[in-house]
Length: 257
View 1 (cartoon, rainbow, N blue to C red):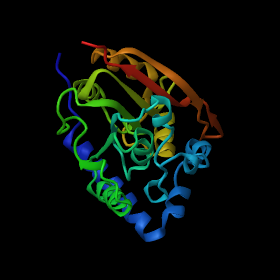
View 2: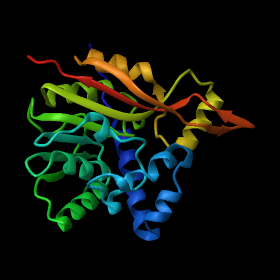
View 3: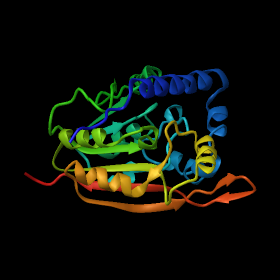
View 4: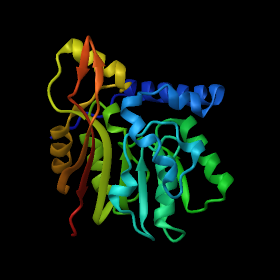
């Protein structure tokens, strides 16, 4: 079966748009950046983020929609990979969970985000946390080298996710697990409504049905794939509120050899 890779145009757009986020943050400040995102999506978690062990305020650009470290139950000594890490807010939280004997790797496509995350880590003197500017379809990491993979609000940016799930499967150790937090939809959308939802959420390529994630993860070889949490996200459209958008947590495991 052939797999359509994420297009170069999509990747260029992601780099550009997220590079602009860093630029706006540096110009206007973190409070301005976090105030100019989709509040109904992120408000429920915004107040909770600073309570997490390892939280770094400089790394929080308000781009996540859940707490993957918490659901993944990261343990001391584990190696964690954070896909689409942005400025690293979840990577820093993962580092606190895995401890000094563990390792955390953050990977992102946007150089400006990786630079920001790296500067924060260096300022704190963290030696077991590193950030890579890398394509999540083709990561420079060995097979079976990671215990846990997390991701937060990234997959909805992508027109196809199957190749990424396959890369996750390659990198995870036997018995390893993943936890993806993302926005999904419960139903098909008419074209006009879809455009309004996309404009509201800011996703470059749209939100997909939760079943798409589950199917693609299973096709990639993962077992015990399930959506373990769902939070409705109301979206103002036309004269009313659209209730078919959901923030979910999806988990799965790579079986032992």
